[in-house]
Length: 121
Image 1 (cartoon, rainbow, N blue to C red):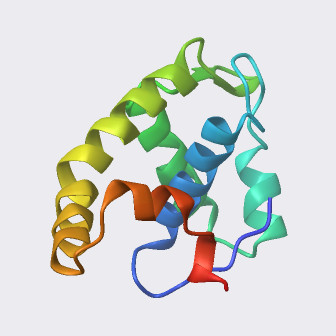
Image 2: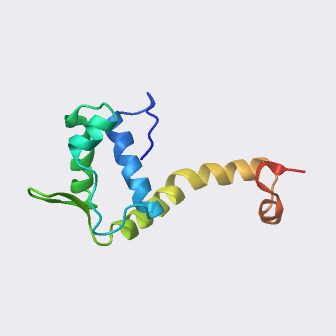
């Protein structure tokens, strides 16, 4: 796990988002253990309370389960649940602004589908 912290949001939220990204990318699958709080705290020089807060939010979101004495594990169906919520959030929050920009620029779907990324010529 490689993380570059930024000042835009709390570190626990950035750590949570990183774990969520790993679930969506398939790097963490149902039943996989999360690295221990101590391991993450030591590796990234974080306060263990910060790591615990990120992990607790994952538990609260029913994405990770805490197995007393043995650690945290990705729950069955977590990636599917995340994918559905991320798609819904994208369509609700990001797509309308993107669609408005497309309209302002006078682009059409055919142009968008055939143009290479970066508009390379």
